[in-house]
Image (cartoon, rainbow, N blue to C red; front, side, top):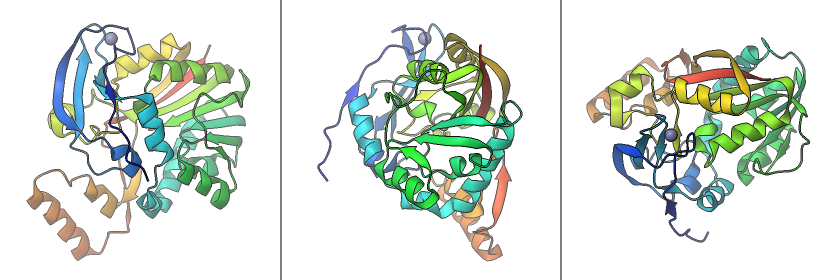
Length: 302
Ligand SMILES: [Zn+2]
């Protein structure tokens, strides 16, 4: 595979258009981490320069990779380890579906950033399910393993007419996009009036983000926007969406997977936890944790 030219660009605030910001964290940027795999890269620490808009408070990476760089990276993204947690990812899909079904029980559902299709596979019991996924590798698994309608396309696709969907889901996706404001407007256009946008994203206003600061696990090269509840609400409102549910989002993973979250913290802590997991033989056992630093929202199209 050809090595991609590193490409970063300075951008104004996506929420309010301001160019006035202050630096919150300053690290080198791990270019190349996108094609390793954006979703679960371990080069957490090199997340670049993170700034906060002085006018509206939006936190974002600046400079950040260009759209072309990101699309090339996500298109080539292959992550076999993503499949290791298939049971827990399926259960997490059902947890999300249960929340969505409080507001929408059936109809057409689109997932943007469907990855290998665990959520859609859960959703299709109740919905006519479709997905968009830029990774060739992941979308192929979704089509071949789960027989899902997942297209290897970005949100620029003209495949779906406006007002087509009852639900649009974006799970851990919005923080990866170069233009989240346009993405939410696009999602809103795809929704029928009264349709529901379901969204999960890290919460930079959470306690763990404040305590762990530059070492917070939400900070990683693939994330280029960091929302708190205020900036996310404002962005949804600007897209014509009314928040009807907002809470923290817990999820299920194996003990072994949770332990990898500690990789970048002091080695004795990480080693002790790994030793305990091995001693107790619970590496594959599942555990639900709500670290209270991801937010889950449902927003209704007016
Ligand atoms: Zn701003």
